[in-house]
Length: 171
Image (cartoon, rainbow, N blue to C red; front, side, top):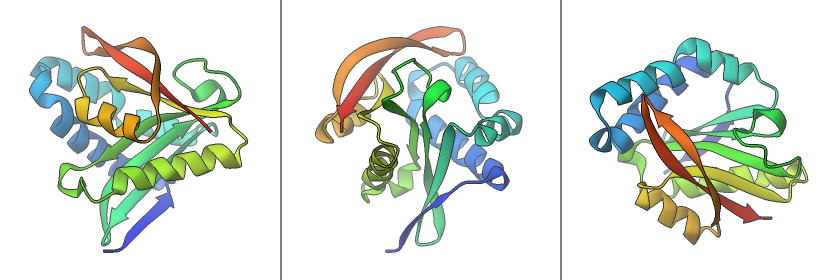
């Protein structure tokens, strides 16, 4: 098994879109209406939106490949790119997406380790993320990795207001 992690460029926008659509649907489709799912995907994963995010110097994306096949990606934010103001000493993990068929191979942990290394390289004191309160597998994973719930914020899936737990890990 060969695993590689590489930094994304603007040329990776189509791949990120494909992975985002696939993983988001796999994970959340059974708990949300088709209308709200489509509304969110059509907003969050357009090529224009992803190109805008890729062009932001305060955000970074990384593709993870398993035996040469794209298995998922990581998005981290610092400074004003963070979705919540968590201070200059924080880095946000906005997305860790792993396709279902690649789960249980340690790829999520590898992306998390990559994010922690980036945070340390940038002299950050903490790393944080938002996770949907109903995503029990992800919450359990982050708790196992040393994250603790430190708050919550609203997240809109289409027109439905949902709650994301804010989880933080001190470095």
